[in-house]
Figure 1 (tube, rainbow, N blue to C red):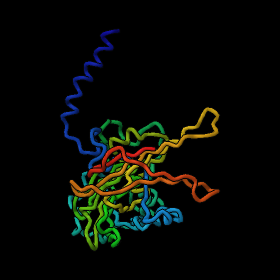
Figure 2: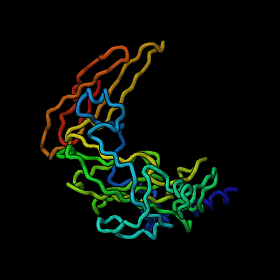
Figure 3: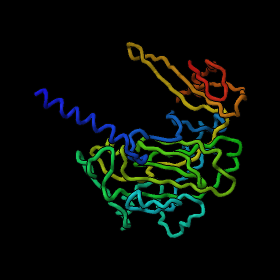
Figure 4: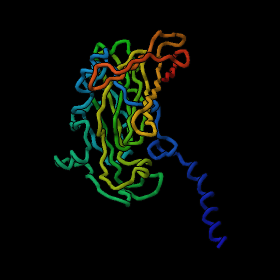
Length: 314
């Protein structure tokens, strides 16, 4: 019995260097989850004034946000090996490409409108492709190429601008004005990229490569429809050079579940040129539906704000 247990282990160890020696594309490489994306944080949308934030019916109405949802140019391909090398260049002619709404799933749009795309697949415990992790060896591993031309508001001038994808299935490689910006897997979490230095006055071209299945698809296998594309909001958000980057709020109840302690930790980031310190203060206000102002306090930073970030807590 011992020999039968040791032999499979020995064979597995011998195979590891062979797999590691192979050159895998990012979408098949378990070591690559993202490239040049921002670290995760709470979703925070800035408003110019506190009153505007309180009166806003929806975060999308903030003047610091430019929503990129709408009709995008779209090209469907059967496999990643067919991706044109210049699809993201501004000079590439996309006039004959399809139009696809964003957000959406291209399989759903294709099935509804009779387009020659791959179809939605429903499966539970069985993968919709041959299981050869981390490789995707299926003859069909569809790709969606997206392109959108847009201009930025004048109010974004002298501010930092982030490009936010709320959800893309399964991989998302981003180009802006012909330059690579970043890469992201993990379909159900947002991807955010700092694009200030790649934007220009006038028309900008955003291009996105989306691959249907990746090494991440093995982890995302569950009882659901297998559909792909840019399926949540896409938007630009502009912040000051010094801005609130992250926020954590914890309300611990007492033993009687009657009263609670509110604990707040904030992260402020400074993107000013190196050596520049920006004066600032951070104040939080707690509102209650029954009264305009319930509680207010100004936080003291735990460290000086150099071009990086500072932490506050209360």
